[in-house]
Image (cartoon, rainbow, N blue to C red; front, side, top):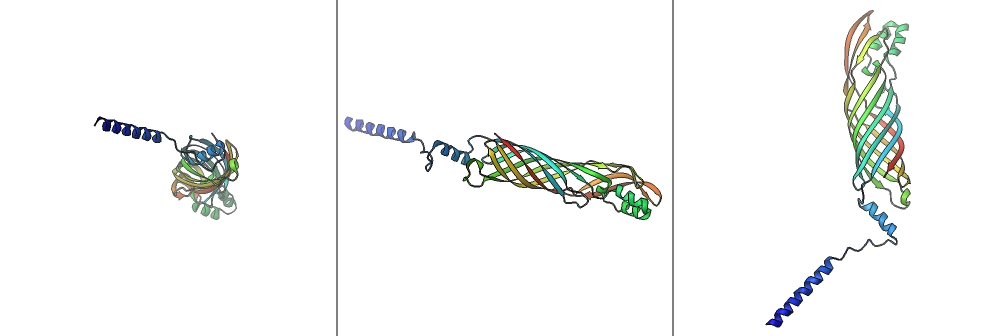
Length: 261
């Protein structure tokens, strides 16, 4: 009886020892790699070993949807942090400037030659034509997802990225100078919701530096642009209020540099 009990205890001890040894074994390293550097590069591409941060500086041009506004220069800055592997969340500020094609100042020149036609053009003018130009300021919360285009070039492999931003736009206009057709023009600052999808491609030139090209659309719902002005008609002047919809949406093209760490 005692011998059987000793034998049972020995078998249990051997089983526990075998289980503990097998449980302490580590997973084998990835196969198919010849050096530790290749293993490290593979893990960098497939796992979030550390959170990356990046800052983008970009410049280019914006083409408005509204035909009364001219294409103009644009620039932006974006800072973001990697939340999941290749997925970045951040904040972006963007600026663009747009001159207006035909304004009340142009209609004033028509009025000087043909008063009747000049007054008619002023009466039919769109709200944006009471301005010489607009400065548009965008404030966005953003996300971007990066997709390396293979790994044949190592560090210099291009990276495709797609993303979007959600936020607000604020538009500040420069009113036309006082003249015969309109005097003492006063406009409210325009603000509205902004959605900004984008796609781009990065070209790494250094471990911490990339060049990139990007195209995006600033989708802004039509909103009311409110103007108060003294409008001349039939030889008399009256104070009037204009409260019509304007579309400040645009398509933008950028090039820039990204600093990563």
